[in-house]
Amino acid sequence: MTDTAVNCDKCPFRAKYDQNPKSILGRLWRWHINWCPGWKKYMLSKSGEERKQLALTYDQNKFLSK
Image 1: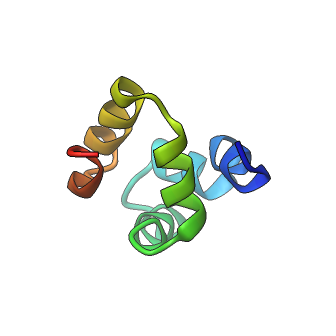
Image 2 (image 1 turned 90 degrees about the horizontal axis):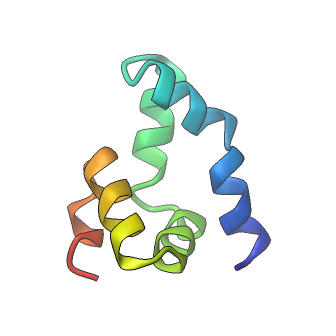
C-alpha cells in the first residue's frame, strides 16, 4: 500500500465529512474523491467487502463493481 493510501485513513477532511457531511470541508472532500488518484488507489487496495462498504458509505457506485 502506498503512503497516499495510508493517508486516506487519517485524512482530516474525511473526518470532517464523517462528522458532518453537509459542512463546507466535508462537501469539499466528497467532491475531491470523485477525481482523486490517491482515493482510487486507496479504494483498489481494499478487499472486496471493505471496498463495497466504503463505496456505499460515500456513494461511490463506480467502486461497487470492481
